[in-house]
Amino acid sequence: MSRPPLHALQGFVATARARNLSRAAEQLHLTTSALSHQIKGLEERIGQRLFVRNARGVSLTADGQQLYERIAAHLDGIENALRPYRSRRGDVLSLTLMPSFANGWLVPRLPRFLAAHPQLELNLQSSIELVDFDRDGALDAGLRYGPGHWPGLEAVHLFDDWIAPTASPGLIARLGRPTLQTLGDYPLLGAPGGRWSDWFAQFGGSAPQRFVANFDDTEALHRAAGEGLGIALGRLTMARPLIEAGRLQLLFPQRLKSDYAHYLVLPPRSREHAGLAAFRAWLLEEAHAYARELAKPAAAKPARPRPGKR
Image (cartoon, rainbow, N blue to C red):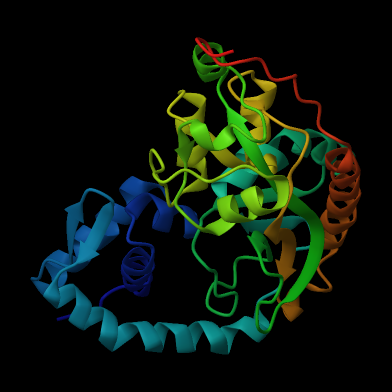
């Protein structure tokens, strides 16, 4: 058997790690079709099926897992050996960021940055997964929401986030607007304990015995509130597009500071990246302006009695 092409093995390992053909193709700057052909050719060459499709993407077969365990570390070793010799272009900037942050905050502001830096090519990769910058040498920096401490990385604080009760106009029209004391009588989205307990402890009222629904994804929580399922303790940065679109309303001017904040994170190798330096300066200006805006007291309409009550 002739030696399998290195690019096919790289494509195989990238797909195994991403568990998604389209995402792996994006990381490798290939079309999904091209990567699919590479993997099919590799399967035909070794006579084994390497992946099976599932609802969320792809997963390794037993043969695929065995091949991955045998070659992944060796490909990483080659990548690490070549990294010091790779020239990094200062006019190409590759960032990883969470989809919610991209859609709700960064993308609406990007035209201003690109207009000021037309020579810069910006590559954005949306992902909620933690990134290994040593393994993925194509990425220069990331935008993340977290505690601010990532081992081996520099974390630049952008702005804090805040949480507050939000509801759809339809729910408010149907049930009336709650007061701080009656909020616990309304359908709430979430789970006992957590930040809802902090809310009631700080601003009064009593938590309900039962919550309508709980979500492990903040975007899904906001969408559920926007559909009128219940009142969500929403993150203002992520909920802002829905608020501005009129699909959600802030119920009170009071709010809680989130446990986490937004950061620009970068590995030591990116500190001298010219494009990242320009992006970092612009990003900090935008973040500080947004933080000042977010610090202003939010306006909330006065409560009106619930239908049928006096």
